[in-house]
Image 1 (spheres, helix red, strand yellow):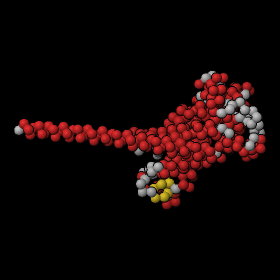
Image 2 (cartoon, helix red, strand yellow; image 1 turned 180 degrees about the vertical axis):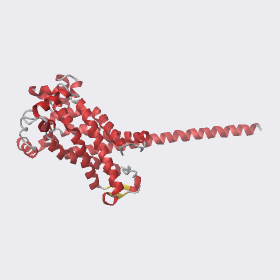
Image 3 (tube, one colour; image 1 turned 135 degrees about the vertical axis):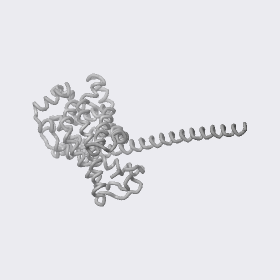
Image 4 (tube, helix red, strand yellow; image 1 turned 45 degrees about the vertical axis):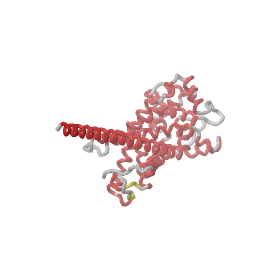
Length: 343
């Protein structure tokens, strides 16, 4: 009898040990799966950001020169400005500041896309599907992702703007590190690297929110109502569909146009604040967001001030966001990740 009890005790102990080992193995596998998910998203997002920004780097530079009223370019338009850059400086001057942009954009885009996936996953669990607006959780996840990414990488955006604003023959900065140390030493320390951060955050909420919301909503519409025209079959995906490349580009381009329309005045304000200390006569733009907005409006009005350079911004934002979302989804497919959705 005693041996039977011992046998039962041992069996129970072995079962408990086996159960604990199984639970530990499950937790370990889950952690590994989550880490794999995050690392693949970071890579896909970073590559997408680099491709999209390089594609529109010349338009990015002329946008900065026009937004901040460079004395050499403020009288020119988009295409005449691009020609003038090549003539006055060189063809490679179209990509001035793009090195700093690449240093910034990889961690920025990697963080933004990965944060969006994480926030979307947990918001979906918390909010469920009973929302007054379809896919509203995507707007909140996108806005949160944008705020997270810009907070971590903002100083690099300031540095890139300073380098892009320079004109050949009038250089003040000799690279990323020299720009960072000069701003830090002469303009007020670490705080100077975050000048213009408040309007950036305020602009990021509608920009990133509408970008992700519009792309996800259009993707849903394409997959649900026009799969034959806009999708290809991919059985491993949720719903067995993948958005075709032309549809990815169209959805991304429209998302970029909508997002920029809402956030552009704050983007102009951010640029004026970032570049304020490069000339004594523009220092007045570095005294705070609301004061900068008021000065821009008072001196130049709405269309020539708060929306200055908007035409180029559409030319730039539509292909940039289109390439960004398309590259991101293509990278995820290359890494055997699911890009489908429940329809």
